Amino acid sequence: MNENLFASFAAPSMMGLPIVVLIVMFPSILFPTPSRLINNRLISIQQWLIQLTSKQMLAIHNQKGRTWALMLMSLILFIGSTNLLGLLPHSFTPTTQLSMNLGMAIPLWAGTVITGFRYKTKASLAHFLPQGTPLPLIPMLVIIETISLFIQPMALAVRLTANITAGHLLIHLIGGATLALINISATTAFITFIILILLTILEFAVALIQAYVFTLLVSLYLHDNT
Amino acid sequence: MASPVPVKEKKLMEVKLGELPGWILMRDFTPKGIAGAFQRGYYRYYNKYINVKKGGVAGISMVLAAYVLFNYCRSYKELKHERLRKYH
Image 1 (cartoon, rainbow over the protein chains, first blue to last red):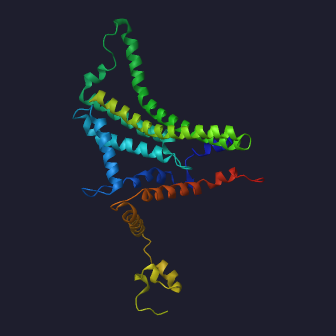
Image 2 (cartoon, each protein chain N blue to C red):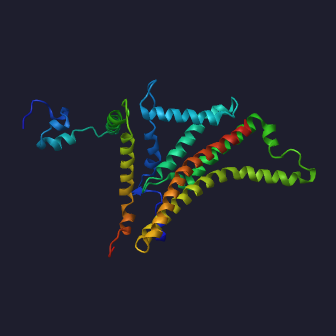
Image 3 (cartoon, chains in turn red, brown):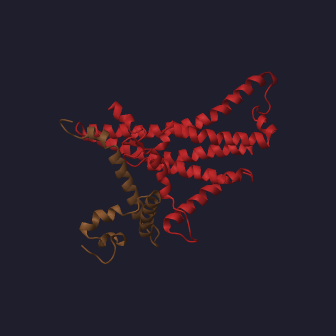
């Protein structure tokens, strides 16, 4: 049982070929390109959702920050669709791999920081010292702020990985417990099944929320630096 | 087996059974040909089920069901051990 639990998180490869590339590219098939003014229902729904999200997300940015609109929207679309597809039975979720999340978090965070340093050097450096700190505390506070700056990409990546992985693990465990309890006591199995249903609903929410949080934080870091 | 139309240009349903191996060998297996086959298949499915005036949930749920099936086949080796059998 112990080995089975983590086997679903291993990178998939069929006959030695790494098909994880195929699985990462799969969500792109579900978002067709709009080619007309009035499209079919699938594209219209997706367009409406993207407009809703982008208006909400880009409202706080100035002109310079809004050049990141495409990046942020594709980010939330990718993470949201990948997480939701991972809730299907037997599927592999790429966002459970820390390598992929680090690959997303570090370049984006570094982009925001470097943008800040290039265009508003003084203001970016000023972020290291909150206003109104007493004079003796300044050296220590600068060190603390530097550490908290460098922890941002790690926190972004690990937050996403841990949330999705923990959710999937819980579903596996409680599902296994339900199955094992059926022969022992039907009522307990039923209660466990209800817990499983609630957990699945939570996982749907978490999938979307994690995407949102990731993107929101990147946009926040951007806002600080533009 | 003499046919007035050359074997290569016939569609699959019109190829006689004896001519089938020859027909398969004459298909275009270059990368461009394979890419073209995938493109044709994709647009055939898309235009039939999704790019219609009143598309339903069936179009996309067939894709998701195929995805689940694909992942099931991929992880069958590990799932084999979880069947309810006396001897594994």
